[in-house]
Amino acid sequence: MQFGLSEEQVLLQDNVNRFLKDNVSLETVRKYAEGGSDKEIWQGLAELGIPALLIPEDQGGLGMTPMDAAITAEAIGYHVAPTPFLGSAIMGPVALSKSSGDYSELLGQIIEGKTRIGIAFGESVGNRNDARVSVEKGKMNGKSIFAFDSDANHYLVADKTKNLYLVDAQASGLEKKELTTIDKTRKTVELIYNGVDAQLLTSDSTVYDETLDIGRVMLAADTLGAAQNMIDQSVAYAMQREQFNRVIASFQAVKHMCAQMTSDLEPCRSMVWFASHALSELPDESRVTACHTKAHLAEVGKAVSKTATEVHGGMGFTDLLGLHYWFKRIGANRQWLGAPELIREEAAKLEGLVA
Image (cartoon, rainbow, N blue to C red; front, side):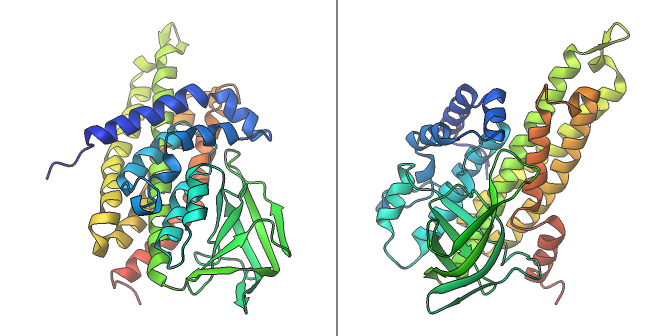
């Protein structure tokens, strides 16, 4: 089997990268981190059809594959673009389109970029002792920790039993506490439910699993893109930074650092592509593959971000180059939807290696 990108996927990759290069500069990222808006960026991506990628054609979407979504996620990670991509183009649309109800109107608003979906899966992938989500007679109580893509119109909420609910962001009894995390390119909140109206989307655990799996693979793709950018920045910096009347790229130690980062990261691209392929074509392997891909990219991304910062020396710790935005994005991706230790244990259970 020849495993590579089709002409259409290369075109998609080029178009998304071109848009992000033109519209998401380092200064744009800085402004967002300081409290700015991502509305223009997301509207531009909506005009490219990004929120419609995974929505079936019979529901008004493009009906494209997880592979197409992964290509887009990698580009977004490369540019550390502040967008609600994971919630509003991936997990939200997947859950809504696979649920039994008619959500065509809501999906249409998502496609147009007018409605955003935040993700509150903290209860189902690990939570604090005081964080519990319970629903009785349509009323939700409890807490969701680290709800991301939180500047949303609706929240997709999962409980411990893998039920999925839709909660209006303006619902009575819903309290939102903005959280300060290391990643300033995406917003995160703690949701507190006090008798909030919650619409049950589905109690089918398969829908939950598919939504979680594709979210994990997209986070891995985002990390892949961010880590690739850090390597590219490191090589460019080493080619122009001089010490002892020589560019530091001529020093063997620096060459080894750049080569090690590249050799560690390059196989990860194939891993992300295969995991994306498995989501749609190999359902028996998709869950385990998603776990391993998310965990492995978290570890490789951490190593690359550390080494890339070292290549830059003291400049890597300043805001002048903005390298920390990529470093911190990789760090946040590592924890979202399950840290490596947790999802490796999950994979081991799926493979029957542990009880």
